[in-house]
Structure formats: structure tokens, C-alpha cells
Length: 583
Ligand code: FDA
Image 1 (cartoon, rainbow, N blue to C red):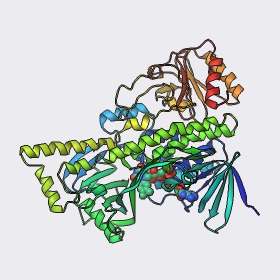
Image 2: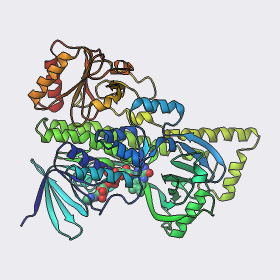
Image 3: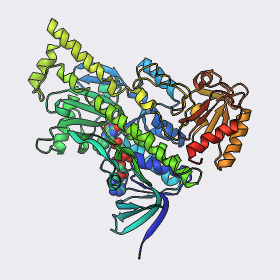
Image 4: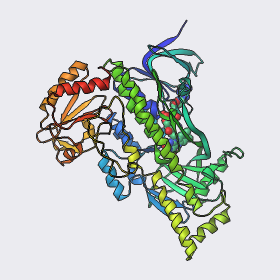
């Protein structure tokens, strides 16, 4: 007897990538099963920085207010203090996560959403609940053992870990969101390049009321130059806020080539006290674990009907907080495509664009995180410290920074430059917001590429050039502010046009009917559905008011027309035929 369960999409893994995929698919009305080998969601805080592009996905899912309600807001995230300990002398500060007034403006102009700090054990339930409430079948204690695919679908062998039963799940497509040791990536033979497990860190999750040490300089991470064997051989210890200001993670390094680290409660308390710098503060250790920095990306992200998302295809340092953010955006890229192919609105070639669009992002973020990781050692190098300085050497080196000598002045300058240089570990707005695509799901408009006027890793570049993210502008309706993002999304293509757009609306209706895929039309401008009250849309749209932007469900501009062409229906038909693979 062959025990087979059928569904449209099987999602393997219920972390940020998998739970987002299940929530998106169910929102789009696609039947899916999500399996998770563990009994529940992440039992530790893990990833926490939740960037604007990621919050935009939650906004599209209708989950933004729930996320903001549980998250620590941006205004409590930004003071990154460098010190000898939390209670000890400060060595310098950074204003991170766009809390510097200059970057605050950049941040606010780029999106209707705000970066926030939402630890993974609080984020995952929001996504898993939404998935389950909207129709996903969520199966915990269920482990993937192997898979085979053929012309028509994928057969996955799974084991129920409660009763040991094995059965088969047959699906049309499979999403491997099974994390940094992905069995799916291995089963389909994705080529992974890079190195796993550089440096060793101990995470101590603990409760302690540190309000008096941080409320006047609120931040989500505090960095300590301390003696000892640290991360990558230098002694940087970190206190990371989990909940303000009574739940924390202490991060301390250990030598991976040495003996196994001590994970006793007493050692946890000792580490916490060393980072805090005040042994009189009561500390209750909740858990201890070790982790290592990986530096790996996949050169391909899919094979036939099987796709890998999240850590399965990119693993890197937590610097820049790109882990779960990128994982969720992988799913945001993939799921509308799967929905359209499964509904018969698009041909399978649309799915190939998942690889073309997201593989370069995987590579880019892994490289960025590695470069950021490399920005910490120069702080220690500026002090001429040996790899594992003892307390005396360390305090002598720090004291020497204050000497009124020429030699000390040079050291001061090097130290301050190294410290301020670490801002690129936390403030790469462009890396987050400028991800852009080249694929058959993007139709060039023939306009010349205009180089970004500013550093694209640091600054958001607002442009409607096809392949770029739709720029955010506030427009109004019935006197209320609405973001351009809210005109789009929800699994549908949107055509945004202006005062001269009547012909576009007719064209979109005809083309949508022809492809059996409704195209939403929104008009922005005087007397339109939405008023361009601030004049921002006019400027940012880069098209005339009888031109149009075709925006994909994931807020990416698929195509644009500067003005109304002679045959808008013909033009739109050609564009959608190319994107949907229905030539
Ligand atoms: P994730 O690993 O979250 O989820 C994998 C899922 O697959 C789980 O549900 C698992 O049970 C399931 N699974 C695996 N194998 C399976 C199988 N065979 N069958 C069924 N289910 C299976 N990032 C960051 O930005 N800042 C940070 O501070 C940290 N800190 C951190 C600490 C620790 C200890 C870890 C392990 C990781 C981090 N990260 C991090 C990384 C961050 O957690 C990571 O980028 C995201 O969790 C990736 O999300 P995914 O959904 O891709 O995988």
C-alpha cells in the first residue's frame, strides 16, 4: 500500500523563507503543505534586523501592523556604542540603521515602512499563523528524507517524527527552505561555493535588567573591545538586545581549533558579566549555543520543479542583517510566479527567472557580508594587539591612545577611522533597496542606463527603469495618504498611468481578458483615482502623464512607456506575452 498525499506546492522548512512562502502561496490561493522537522518555530532569537524591503512584504501580506506591534522600533536601535564593557569607558559611537539624521531622511523617503528589530522567534509565529489561517497545511515533526522529480511533479519522502510513519507527498513544485544544511539543495545537486564555519561564537541568551546602562543611548547592539580569544581571533564581544532592556544575547568568541567551549550556566553568567562589566547585576541564563560564520552561496538556485530559497542558497555573516530579510524576499520573488504558472496564466519559462533574478542577489549579499566581517579586525590592528591579548596588554594599548604624543595621535586617528569604518556593517541602505533584475520577466524600454548618482551600496537609487523596484511616493485619496506601493502587489500586475491614461485602461482590460489574468489599473494625477498632492510621483515616475508603468506583483517595474504609444493594446500584449512566456 502506497501512502500518498497530494498538493500543489510542498514547502520544506518553516523558517523565515519557508513560512513566508507558505503565507504568500495561501494568500494567492495556491494549495500548499509546509513541513518542519522540528516541533515548532525557532526556539532562539537568531536573526532580528528587519529591513524596509522585508517589511514591505509583510505590508503586502497585511501583516505589517502585527510585525510593528511586536518589534522594537527603529528609534531604539541606532546607538551602537563601542566600549570596554557596557558599564566601562566608551571608545566611540555609531548611529546605525539610518538613525543618523541624514540617513533618517534617506530611509523615510525610500519606503512607507520602517526598519525594525524583530527577533526570529517572534517573527516566525506571525508568518506560520498567517499561512495556517489562510489555508496552508502546516505539519510539524515532519522531516524530508529525499525527493525525486519527473516531468509532471515532485515526489518527496517524509517521516512523521512522532509516530515514525513514512509517507510520500506528491506536488507539482517543491520549495526547499530548509536552511543552512539544506537537504533539498543537496538532493538536486546545487553547486555551492565558499566556506562553511569560519570562526566560532558562543551565544548566551539571558535575562538581566540593563535599563540604567542603555536607556540614555538606546541601541540594538553594543560592541566591546576586550581581552581574550574572540571572533576571528580578535576580542570583540557583543551585547544584542532581544527585548528592551531586559532580554539580551551575549556573543563571545572561542577558538574553533581549541577544546570544545564550556556551555555551562556558570560560564554563561561569567560571559554576561564580562560584557556588562558589572558582576553585581542579576543574570538569568536562558540558553547557550555555538555558531560559526559561513560564507557560501549557490551558483544555481533551482532544478526543474524544485527551487531553493533562503539559507539553503546563501549563508553568511550576520553583519548588515541580510539573512532572513533576503530569505523572505527570495520567496516574495518566487511565489507569484508559481501561482501564475499553476493557474495556467504563465508558461514555465517564468519560473526560470527566479534563478536569473535571485542568484545574483545571493552572491551579492554573501560578498557584502564578508567584506563587512572584515571591517572589525582593523579596530584591533590599529591598537597593534596580538591575536589574543591578555588584560594588561589590552588596557595598556587603550590607555596609550590618550597620550599627548605624535605617535599616539596617529594611533588615535587609525583607531577612530577603523571604528567609524564599521558603519558599513550596519548602514548599507542601497544594498537593501537597490536589488534589481535582468531576466525575461523584465522588458527593457530602450532607454539608456543612467548610472546611479551616488554609491549604490550606501544610497537608494529611485528609478522606474525596468528591473528596478517601484519608487515609493505618497499620493492621496479622499485626503488620506497612500503609498504607491499600496496601489500594487497582492499577487497581481498593476498598470499605473496618469491623466492621459484612459486608453491604457481600455488596453489593460482587453489584454488582461486575453491572458485570463486581470491587470489592475491605477491612475495618479489631477482628477485621477489618486492625487499626486506632493508632486513626488510626477518626478519619480520618469514617464509623462500619458505614459505608464507596468508593476509586477513583487513591486518590480516590469516595463514602462514614456508616453502613450499608437497601439497601447498591442504594446501591452507583446510585453505580457514575453514576461509570461506566452508568445
Ligand atoms: P532556517 O534555518 O531559519 O529554517 C530552516 C527550516 O527548515 C526549519 O524550519 C527547519 O526545521 C527546517 N528543516 C531543515 N531540514 C529539514 C528537513 N530535512 N525536513 C523538514 N524540515 C527541515 N541572521 C542574522 O541576520 N542575524 C543574526 O543575528 C543571526 N543569528 C543567527 C544565530 C544562529 C544560531 C543561527 C543558526 C542563525 C542566525 N542567523 C542570523 C541566520 C538566520 O537565522 C537565517 O538567515 C535565517 O533563519 C534563514 O531562514 P531560512 O528560512 O532560510 O532557514
